[in-house]
Image (cartoon, rainbow over all chains, first blue to last red; front, side, top):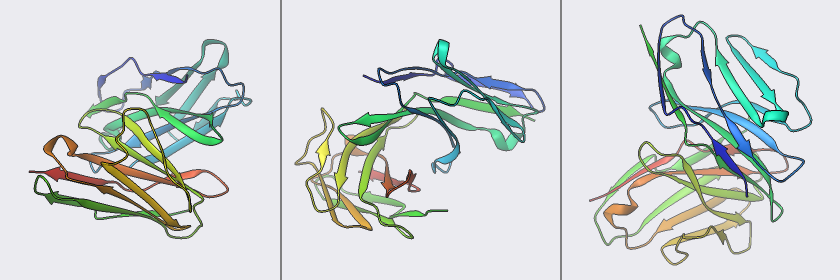
Length: 116
Length: 113
C-alpha cells in the first residue's frame, strides 16, 4: 500500500527566511509520480510540481525548489525567501496505478505560516 | 490549462435532506473522475473513483448508499449526499482525468445543520 508522510504539522517562519517542507513516501511500485500541492485558505488545490520516479533531477522554479531522493524515498520542497503569500497548507502526494486507475494518496499536509 | 468546475461552491442544508454536488470538466473529456473528502485541518481522502457509464468504485469505509456517484457523461459527474447529517459536513473535491493527468476542482464546502 502507498503511504505519504509529512512529519511537520505546522511551521512558522519570518518573511524572507528559507523553509523546507519534508515528505517521505512508501510504495511497492517501480513507476510512480510525486506531487506537491498548495492549498490556501480558499480551499482550492494549486498544483506546484509533478515528478516521475525515473527522474531524480532536482528542479528549481523561481523561489521554489524540489529535492527528490529515491534512495531515501523523500521528495522535499524548499521555498527560498518566503513571503506572506506563501502561507498555506502544502500537501505532498503520491500516484501509482491501483486497479488501472491513477490513484493519488495525499500526505497529512504541512501548514506554513509566514510572519511579516 | 484544463479547467474543472464544481457547483455549488458551498451549501448549507438541514439534517435529513439530500445534497447534489456537480463536477464538470470544461475543456476536456473526463473518462475518470475521483471524489475526495477533506475534514477541517485534515488531508484529502479518496472516497470513490468512477468511469463514465459504469458504476463507481468506492474506497473501504465509504457507504455507497449514502454517497451516490453518477458519471453519466464524459464531462459531468455528480455526488449526492443522501440523508445528510452534521458529521457529513466537509469539503468535497473532485478530480477529473482524461488521457493525461487529473485536474482538481475548486471544491464544495458542505455544512449540515
